[in-house]
Image (cartoon, rainbow, N blue to C red; front, side, top):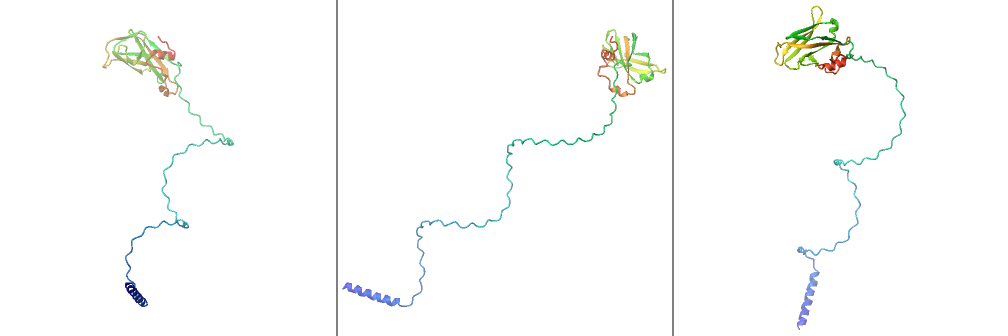
Length: 243
């Protein structure tokens, strides 16, 4: 009985559904909520490379980088073939001859020496009558030396200080009113100055006159390199007696 009842109900519902389906469709209902995301599927195979795009415009040049170290020097190249010698040039004009140099003082040409004997004096004395003309005297160099009992054969230069160091000799070569040449001597206390008033005796006095070559007054600065305060050197150079 129950089976027949359910069967009858089912048939009835089927009939109702059939009737309903034959009517006009109703409006769609609202979409339901998205369901949960399913698991990610496996990655498909990679696609083929696409065609290359066109090259873009060239950008501006970047700044120059630092200079690198110099490389090693390469081997020297082979010598080239010598060139052909050029034609000799024309000889130049000879230059003007230079001015003649200054003549030096000759060794003993025209050198004169005058020797005076022993003399005792106080403060002043004059060795006069030197046999020279004015022309010769004005173109000559004068050197004078003396000896004393204490200096024996040692010749002391004039001007200068005596061996004991207590007086200084001052000299002057001059011409008097009669054109006579003389050597004037004056003694001063050394080193305090003032006239030396003690009598002195000079055993001998010598004057050496060295002429300067004619027209050559520059020779005054071209004297030989000898010590003119040393009588022995002067005498040896000019060929004069050394005693």
